[in-house]
Length: 163
Image: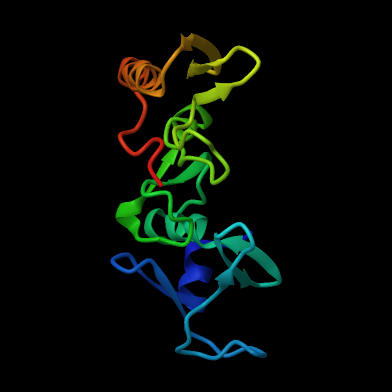
């Protein structure tokens, strides 16, 4: 298991930029170069002592001395942005309250979808992992307002649904 001391032997971390720098050369890894590479899901992956780690989890270890016990949320939804101010450890419920809109979303707003079967816009929200049906609306604006109202009521993060 990687410790904070071992991590600091291998890498430096700049909390203002979120970038890890190699402190030692090893194989293709050269001292002074930026550590890690972008994972196919957009996260930065770093190899250390034969294991693969996500950079945002290593940032938490570097700054606090402990690997995170819960989810690490990228507040601005940019998975490769590992600046300390952009990261927060949260539970699954809180992590779900700060989601970006899905790329293939027709509405552009999580929890609002057109249901051609019903001929209306459905709005839904979650409270403590329980789905709440907010209603079926004839226009997108009404569905979006209902969803945004529910986000305020249930404590969603202000960035929820933003790209």
